[in-house]
Length: 323
Image (cartoon, rainbow, N blue to C red; front, top):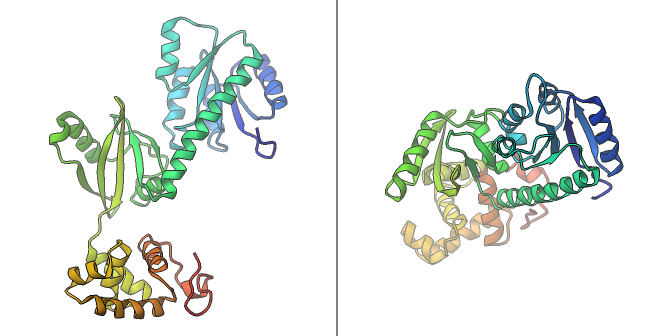
């Protein structure tokens, strides 16, 4: 474990002796420990701090561990956080109940502390791999999310979550609109014969949802995209980059990876005319080459360009753009 970054463990148990024992052992092992004496207290704790892993007693008065886990897993921020159950019961039905509630593992009481610490390390490492994969997808501009068959969001890349949030599906609303869920259920039932894309209006913005596939029988992978027309994108480029209509057309197709010849064929221009337009575009934007211009297209269409982009650090002198 990196000593500069202490993983946070939430320990939930109604027995003060168990809480104290685990607190001391885990602190000594280098973890930051949060404790909760009940399921309801755990639900309150996670509104103020997000743990990296949870140790959860299965049998507690009031809200037991199984229901506590189900409620924790409904929160998007905790959907990928591993939960290890602690139980004196090792019968198959209790183990299955723990796993079905969202747990990844269980330890039996009385606990061997060294075993608990070892299991924490293994599950934290696995969780980091999952989180790294999600971050890599997000960095690559992937608007991906996985849902279960009820429409509950199991996980999503940050970009997909932000897109849904802007559309009115808030981060703590872990279910998607009923229309979208119904389409997914029809698609899964019909198989390959059903349409694989669906357009949906959420919070005033049009989104295109694509079915990618089923990760397992109860986890469905989707891809989101803003549903926009070339004319809309051209309008954004014109407005945000102060281009003419023709320059915006040429730049849009450049941003989509087209060559000068391709752009000429699409727009009915000669390659020489396309090149002349690009020379003027490069000068206006203060970029030197196609790659820099294409990067600026992506940033502009994603809304990541500052309002006064030449005055906010991206302009680095004549003919150059940083970032």
